[in-house]
Length: 288
Image (tube, rainbow, N blue to C red):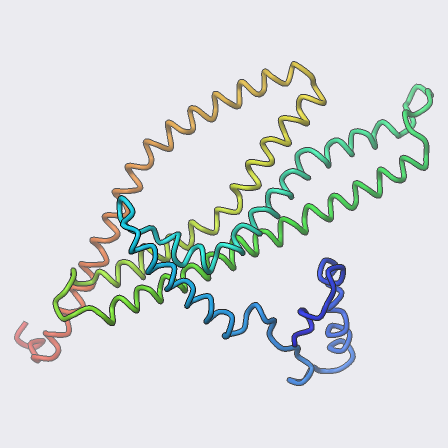
């Protein structure tokens, strides 16, 4: 069993389970026997089970007859990437809430605990001020930890698992195709263009949870700090959102045109390569 699997929750949070390995590597060069084994979550056996679940879910999704065709998110997305994605979203959302609400309020109270310039007594005692400082340090560390871990799960693990499962589905479909069935170069366009671009977009999804909680936390902090005057900023923000949505709708048409042009470019390059093979095989280079 891996060192990570046997470590406790406190050790995982503070990365204490890496300490003995780092200390051993500082004292002497590491050997293969010193390197811990792969955690159970990343071994081939559980990943193979998840791929089997993905195929089963995809088969069930195809049999439902959903309007608009089967949705790939309910196949490999839910079985393989679902747990990692939602865990990452939760951690990123918690980080956004700590950044926009908890940390500003703690910082405000800590400033109130400092002795004023006019010599009047501070709002809090010295012991409570130290407690606020410790709490602020813990919140700063926790927000960075949850953001980094959330980006890892929702921005790296989940998109990678989803892409691997989708590639398996594409490969399974290709093995069942007959000669001259389907459009030429479709698998190249799907796996090499659409799927890889989708993986890049999925890495941006962790910001959704953080953006939502940051918005809510920022509004609460704004109202608690400024009072009704903060509603002016809220109205301005709403106006910016409406204008941004209009601009995004205009850019969506341009993006779809770019995707269509990219598909055509991939198909043309494939035809050029196939034509070059014919020219080389027939030794037509000299005559051309």
